[in-house]
Image 1 (cartoon, rainbow, N blue to C red):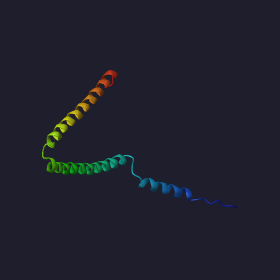
Image 2 (image 1 turned 120 degrees about the vertical axis):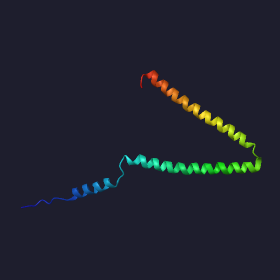
Image 3 (image 1 turned 60 degrees about the vertical axis):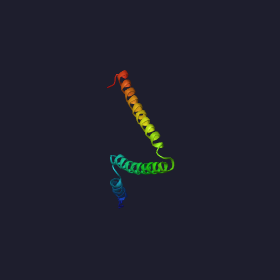
Image 4 (image 1 turned 90 degrees about the horizontal axis):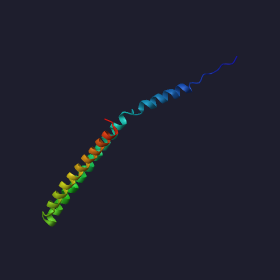
Length: 104
């Protein structure tokens, strides 16, 4: 009479897969983690840009006087209005395409 030995390999594989899946992040958590990392990185980038702008303005103020401030203010206002005109134009075009296609 011959005995058939049942292997426990399959249960070990199954248990190791369970542990593997428990250690993985859920798919819903990945975008939140990515957004947190992106926001943290953007904070540092904006801080570096802010420091650069402040230091540059002080250097320009000491070397050239305050005449450059009028140029900075003029270009800043122009850039502000240009950005929002482009954004509102894009929103208007998007809404117009919805109206034309009949989607709401």
